[in-house]
Length: 324
Image (cartoon, rainbow, N blue to C red; front, side):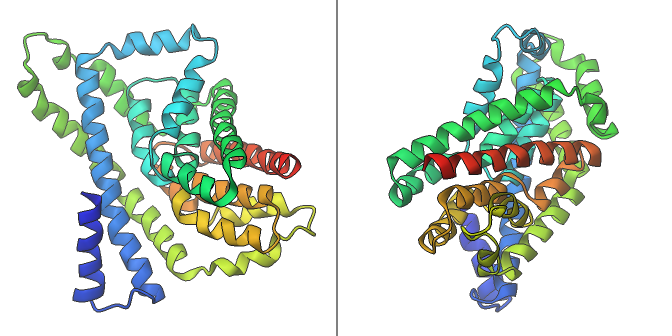
């Protein structure tokens, strides 16, 4: 479906509007239209599926089970591993994050997923093997899952539930108060209209944030030249790793999209750990993601999330430079 969507957007931007695919505006508008439709479809579909899950599965029991830490930290590993096998960018992971929070999954566990999901996926790992070899790929994959696991655990221990926005807390209260889905007499088809209305209500609630976030990402994608950053993260700068992370956050791409850039940076002499830290910042943290998260988190919570993840990315970058 997304291949069909890409062709449709290309026809709209390049053939109908008449923009050149090599121009800044052409790239930016293509990015905006494609990602807007893609993320809104994902948001509705995932919220709809979470509504079905809430209708048939005892979410309260699952939440209670995870909250009692019966897995001794295994729930963070499971969420982080699940994030690794979902091929989403940082903004596309937000709908799943909203669904997890709405379903009552502990916040730290949802953060473990949100951190890992954009960092590690099968497409990126396949490209990583061809560019940097099996050893670097294995280290990257394991470190990405560990980063999500440890980051999720640390963020969970901070007890930031009060920093969720009134909107998401209201959605959570509504989900717990709804009794219609608990009526065993309702058939699957009878439950679907209510699930659909709830999913559409959530999509309408986050729509402005989605469009603003994607617009920012589209502007960065189309107008910020990648070569601009190379001179600031050379191997001669001892602060190259944290600087690479700071420079990577404003950019927005998925792992597969940024990996060719990372290969060029390494070929030009930038240490692989610095380059990977830059990549992690690009795909794992972004201003568009922050705009999407603003619907469910306060700015303080977003700052804590970004700061914690950035710290672990910087630490990973220095470790990569030592190991590789």
